[in-house]
Amino acid sequence: MQTWQIVMIVIMVVLIAAIIVLYFLGRKAQKKQAEQQEQLDAMKQTVSMLIIDKKRMKLKDAGLPQMVIDQTPKYLRGSKLPIVKAKVGPQIMSFISDEKIFEDIPVKKEVKATISGLYITSVKGLHGNIQTKETGKKNWRTKFREKVEALQEKAGAKPLK
Image 1: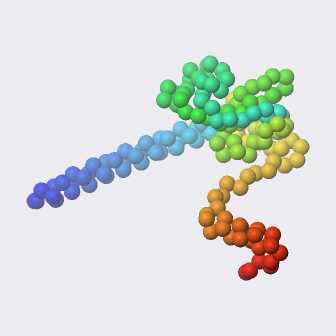
Image 2: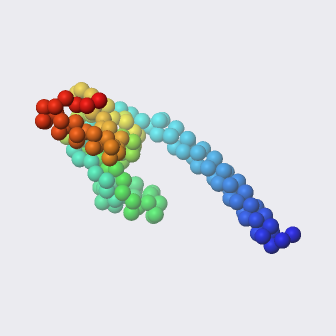
Image 3: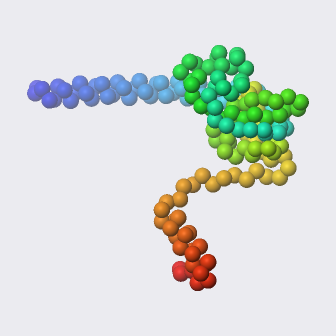
């Protein structure tokens, strides 16, 4: 056998071993996530709250209980989380929001939120609906077309199609 063939065989064996390891680690992480989701669903409750403020903050600056900060792994303590300050009943509390709904949470409005411990999982408007923002980015062609249509409309010309 030539040297390059031996090198290729060794590389293939290492790649196959890496794929097998990643497969089993992925399955383990998926089971762990499903278990955590079950716990969140078991503990959830619907609460009416007034949203005071929302920000992305570091865990230690968020005003969360010390027990929560102590339970967080050290490598995640410096990362920024979506934090929501809300008035629930007579007290003001800090909550951690789900990334998917953080942009949809209205500030200075009363909402009905589904919470699980200190974690907000969903939000519904108490008085009327919550407007969701479109997150789709526009490319340069769409922006240019909108500018041209606005200029044509301002000049009084009919838009070309």
